[in-house]
Amino acid sequence: MNAFAAAIDVLFSDPNMAIDALYRAGGVGVGSSVRVIRKAPDETFTFGEGRFVADTMTFDLRVSEVPGLATGDSLEVT
Image (cartoon, rainbow, N blue to C red; front, side, top):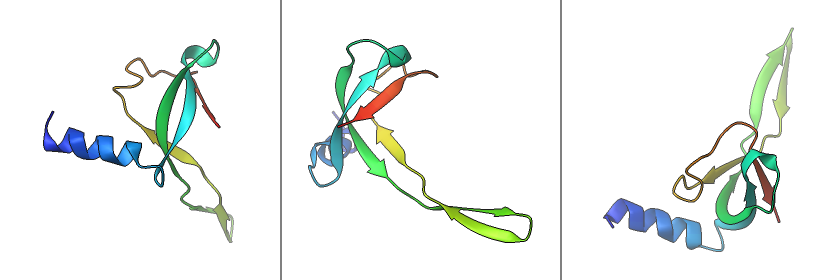
């Protein structure tokens, strides 16, 4: 394990940064437990003359935990 991998492991094991989630391949099935880091950046967009701010929610997860990540997969945050 190199220093980068060790640092990523520390971030995903920190209870203040990462949370538990359930990953389901294809969006169905029993699923497997993974750790994710939740990010909630606001997204700004324009429509006509108006400028709007929308709430967004994104998650970082380790590809090593879900190597076959594909469209249609789902995450359930508990």
